[in-house]
Image (cartoon, rainbow, N blue to C red; front, side):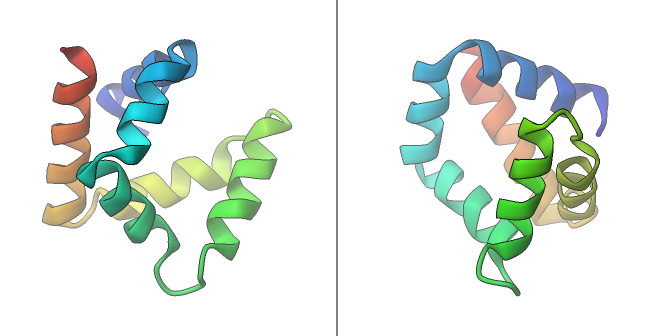
Length: 85
């Protein structure tokens, strides 16, 4: 996970209202679609459970793979800008 993504994760973790708002936004919905495509969310659920237990490696890998595409990188950048406001 790059620095921008790590900072975004920390901001959302410390601000549940911002996280709820993000998840209801178009970009939040696009993020969920990108993270769940292919396996109907099974991988995301497993990664989230592991992260909740203190092992964020799977979730980090998912986000890193998503950011390899121009669409994924642009999405994360838009989300980061929205959270900064």
